[in-house]
Image (cartoon, rainbow, N blue to C red; front, side):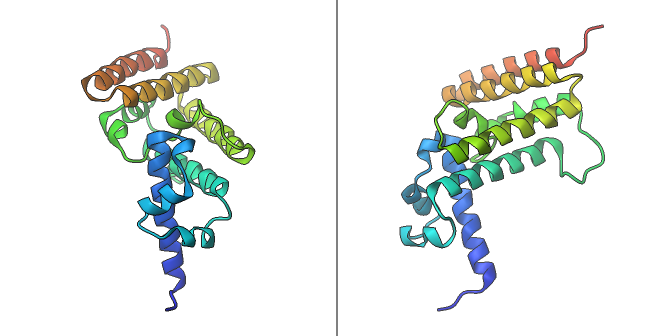
Length: 184
């Protein structure tokens, strides 16, 4: 049976979504060809019709997860107005982001070892977050400190879960907002 081009594109999107979920939940080590294909409810054999390798999938998942998160935090690239830094902090360190199946890939990937191409994708992703925060923060050092606080806070909150995770998010939101407020 022949499928149309849209079927192949839709199947690739399912595979990518499954990879992003595994990436957010367990980091790069959780993204296996078998696990991704099972998560996409597809057979293992079809993987290579969509990606050259696990590393290519990992790089694509990292990039797509970052795109999705940055768009949710800062709006679509074509949006004229920059969001308020306070709103970005609230969305990133919010309950919805904590509980999302996919979200920022950095908390799950910053500490783990990646292959060379995926590590380069991770560096590009971190830089994109730095640039996006710098555009709404008062200066680059503040943006860097906020990024570290937000990513680390989300990682700890995800690890703890429940009420303890919520407490970490509240504390990080409060501290991030203080850091983001210029001294008078």
